[in-house]
Amino acid sequence: MAQQGFDVADAQAISSGAAGVIVHVNPDETELPIFLAWKELTVTARRQKRPLLNQVTGKITSGFYAIMGPSGSGKSTLLNALSCRLDRGVSMSGELKLNGQPYGSTELKLMSGYVMQDDLLNAHLTVEETLRYTAELRMPRTTTPEERMARVEEVMQQVGLSHVRSVVVGSPLKKGISGGERKRLCVAMELLTKPKLLFLDEPTSGLDSVTALSLCKLLRRLAASRTCTVVCTIHQPQAKIFNLFDQLLLLNRGTIVYQGPAQGALDFFDRSGFPCPAYENPADHFLDVITPSMNDSVESLVEKEEKLKRHYTPPAVDHLLGSPKPLILPRDTTPWSKQFQVLLRRSLKETWRKRSATYVLLAQTVVMAVLIGTVFLRIGTSQTSTTRRQPVLFFTVINQGMFGALIVINSFPSERLLSLRERAAGTYHVSAYFLAKITAETISQLPAPILFSCIVYFLVGFQLVASKFFIFMAFMVLCSLSATSLALAVSAIARTTDMAVTVLPMALEVCRLFGGFFLSPANIPLYFKWLNALSYVQYTYVGISLNELHGLKLYCAPNQINSSGKCPVTSGEQTIKALGLDYISIGGCAGVLIGYIIFCRVVAYLGVRFIKY
Image 1 (cartoon, rainbow, N blue to C red):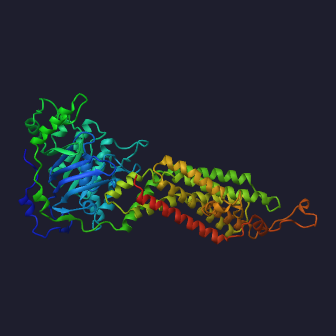
Image 2 (image 1 turned 120 degrees about the horizontal axis):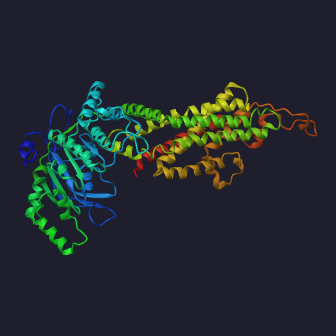
């Protein structure tokens, strides 16, 4: 079978430029071939002695490449090494070049696509929306909206998704498109930028035989167009899929057993003494030969390996490693401001699609506001009102801090893998994603504390002064944002939703304990002062207490006058001093809460930025 590639003469005819040239052009303007070559490539896990890849040498020019082998043979490791996606826990040595020059993830992101084994997609967007947002984020900034939409339409038709364009992607808990359509959508997202290289990790995993064959036929058509080289890992394909591959790279225990034309592998195994029986799937036969069974002795395994080694000759790659040619890179990428704008629109649409959670939050808010308001209905300004006013003020803080925090606790764990996939593809900067995410979360959180304030304030009968009402509302908003910021920080740092849900209640309880109601700040032990300073509950409670008590006039019933004929407490200022709340001002409380919100969100950003498990 003739190889679909090009020889050195073809490569040398591309450009007479200097070595190491990177050409920033529009991929539509010219077509330059891409070739990967590696020599004595070794990848080792730092905690293991056995290498994951052991001095492998090979090349990829053009066509449809399959990296095949049994489990643990190093397929994904080789794919990730070629695509610059190795984990930090491994080390790599040897030569690895793209078009004859060293490369890194920065260059590769601009000219390649990578489809992960797991279909990590936004469950609340439609197929068309998913592609449209991806196009806005990844296509060059000079692309017009009309060109982007035309490309989205072209890709949807190319991968056969036009009939489900308006269907929500869905998830295991939300009905959506099928598994095969999800995989096609993942491929379509990478095709939007017209990549020269397309890497796929186990693309047929989890698909039925018909769907898997349909997907591989799509990949075969892409490779046959000679504008995109397709490289995929695959475990044990059916015969119809195997016959679609141009080139086969067979791995076993970190070494290459065979590399060359896929159909040539039959002759290779025949020459090595392992002919493929008639009517047997070649892929099954190859794996049966190189995979040890329970009945195989050590001697027979060694004999098999020696026979295969004697007949395998590594491909010549020195001419590819030493012939630098230009790399095609887009002129520009999407600026940060555009990334933020697109991600904000995407987050707001996702929030709108999940509005049932917001409706539940608003319903809880109304129920609790009415309940609190009626329990403490019209507390008045008598002497006994002082014993009711502080509990209701404290309980409003507790209520506003709890529900909002529980709503956002799953924000980052549920999206971590999706975000990591998009960032690995160079889709956006993490700061743009984070700011868009928390902006959308903040917008969705604002109605609840505002509605709560409007109901509780007038039912309880706090001071009917407009400025005091709006200050109370502002503190309820700050309280809600502080609690959600704490939840976002926990959410960003925690490995899973379960861990976040376990840690958050403890953090909220600590904030309540040091909230200033049960224990005055002056009476807190010195070694717990730092916890007191970290309680958003304290500063919200003190802030709304100062707001309500300043200017409050209290009266005495005849039976409440003391023996000297005077009213014990006549103003809210006396209560402020008695409770020890005069150590800070209303503005000071608001300033601390704003600082608290910023601090928690910075912690959340660092968690999103650096935690990748």
